[in-house]
Image (tube, rainbow, N blue to C red):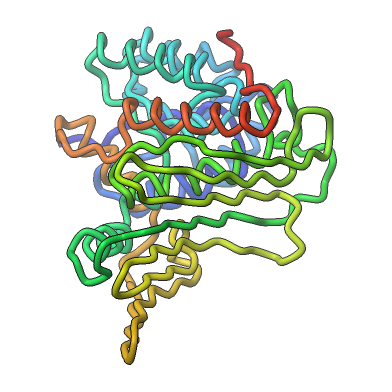
Length: 330
């Protein structure tokens, strides 16, 4: 079979790690084309990463009949708009997280994806790594005992004031950029949808949160806490903890295990540490996306899951006294 030809909408920094590098090692997919708001930036990206085709606009890339699918690393507020336009153009879509600016946008995209039958995945790359499967196996396999509580932390420092993730107009904020991971972790490991009990946020700019914490509850009585910060005093603090009646599982770097990670299970008189050398999360994600385009029904981050994740994020913002973000389609 021919390799999946992917066009990249935007020359964001993440595109190199999430698309270009894994595609260069893949027999299933290739980064075929690039377009950026600034054509000069697209040309520079193409030269630096050996992308064969450049386009002067996103519209031109979508009109390219040689492009099978698109990867969207644009600002949050533009995710829904360009995913919908890509679907209209007949392209499969791998869209960066968070999937959209809010749950209403996510629902519109999910409906369009269902109507077209095209593959659409949210780029929660951690979900496709073997570490994710091992975490789920431990949580649902019984060795922790009945799970009582889950806690996810995703914090990092982002001091530059002009970074797009601080822009309200571009649907920025700590809960959007960092918190979407924390919410996704607890939802996935719990295997259920939570309600927001309470939330608090501290802002750096009006309506733009630098730190947000939320308490969640699940229908069966389990509780959870998510903490998101783009103003962390520590360099990075990314972890998830699942507390059971018998044992506790604590995982450092569950979302980027290729850099460093540790899975530890502890209980009275017991401790076990596990690590995985299984390639990058991005490589596993790209392989899964290519398989989805080829017809595999095993997409782990489909639009329906994205809608549910955005609903929780919207509810956290409301509980914290902030408004859900707005996107280009609102």
